[in-house]
Amino acid sequence: MFGYININRKELAEDSQKAYQAYYCGLCQALKNSCGTKGQMLLNYDMTFLVVLLTGLYELEHEESEFTCPLHPTKKQTAWINEATAYAADMNVILAYQSLADDWKDEKAYSKKTMMRFLQKDYEKIRQKYPRQVAAVERYMHKLGEAENAGEENIDVIAGLTGEMMGEIFDWKEDEWSEELRCLSFYLGKFIYLMDAYEDLEKDKKRQEYNPLAHMVCQKEGDFETFARLLLTSMISECAKSFERLPVLMHADLLRNVLYSGVWSKYEYLQLKKRKQQEKKNRRVK
Image 1 (spheres, one colour):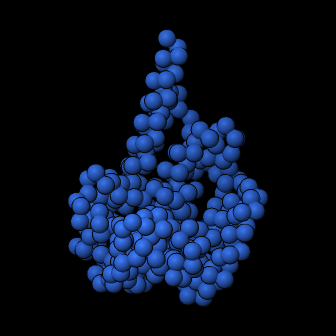
Image 2 (cartoon, rainbow, N blue to C red):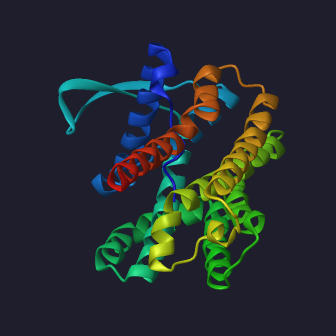
Image 3 (tube, rainbow, N blue to C red):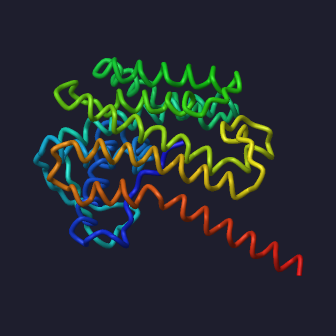
C-alpha cells in the first residue's frame, strides 16, 4: 500500500537531491545495522520522508559515512544518519512485518510467512521499545480487515483508519508538535490509502475484490476521474497546511517538493498510462 511519498527530481535542486539520497541511504544502512541484509529489503521512500521531516522539525545533526553499495559498486555512497533515522527504520520494520502478515493471510504465499519468521525477533524487540506504535499498527490491521470484509462504503471512514495509524507513527516524541504532526500524517495516510485504491481499482474490479472507490456511482467516466482528483487533492492540501504550520526551516524545500509535487508522481504516471491505452483502443476502432 505504501510507496507513494517520493520526491520529484526534475523540480528539486541538486543539493537537495543529494541530501534526500543521503537520508535514503542512511535509512538503508540503519535497517542493515538493526536487522541485517533482510532489513534492507524492507526499505521504502515513505519512511525516508519521515526521517527528513523529523530531522527538519527537531533540527537534528547527522553523522556522515561512506560505504560501498552492492547495487552501485563503482562509486562510494554517502549516508546521513541521526536518531530519527533509527526511529524510522524501526517503524519501517513494523509496517513491513504487518504487510507481510496481511499478504500471508490473503495469498497464503509461504515466501511471505518465511520472511515474517526472519523478522519475528526484530519485531518483538521493536515492540519493547515502541509499544504504542506497534499496538497502533496491529490495531489498524485488525480494523482495516474488519472494514474491508464488511464492505465498508464510507470512503472517509476506511481511509481514516490509515490516517490514524500514521498519526501514531509520525508522533515520535508526544510533545508540543504532536497535534500538528498527527494532523499532517492523518491526511497523508488518507491520501496514501486512496491513491492505492485508485491505482488498484481496475485490477480489483476484475478480481471482484474490495475497493472503496468501486462503490462510487458515476454516470460518466469523467465524473469519477474528476471526483478522484478532487478527493486526493483535498487530502494532500490539508496535509500541506499542517506542514506549513510547523516551524520547519531545515530541508523545507525538499519537504515541500514531496508534498506539492512528488506525491503526484504515481498519479501522473497512471494518467499517462490511461491515455496511451485509450489512444490504442481508438486506433483499433478506426
